[in-house]
Length: 98
Image 1 (cartoon, rainbow, N blue to C red):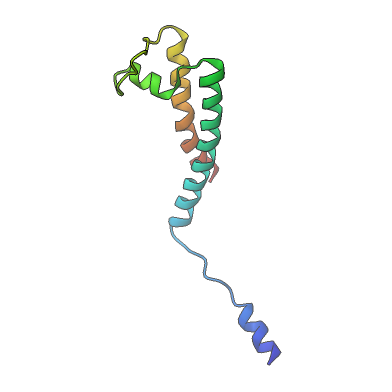
Image 2 (tube, rainbow, N blue to C red):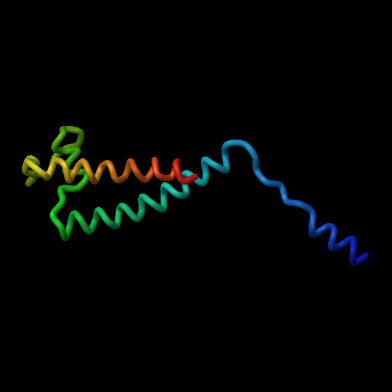
């Protein structure tokens, strides 16, 4: 009787197959890495004077600019593009890692 109970508990669990486990892992790693990049970007925007993602997209005409927004010049364009690319790298890095 005790052996039967142990055998019932030790049956293998059903492991999902197909592409879904990989998709869920990519989504999870992307979420974690994007959260870390968000924290880094917040530091860069408020304490280091970077233009930010929204400022860069507004400068390219993809978003409505803020009332007091000045056009980006010189290195600010590159810094803004770096911030946008950091979010894209979160997804690509997650795909590569998984």
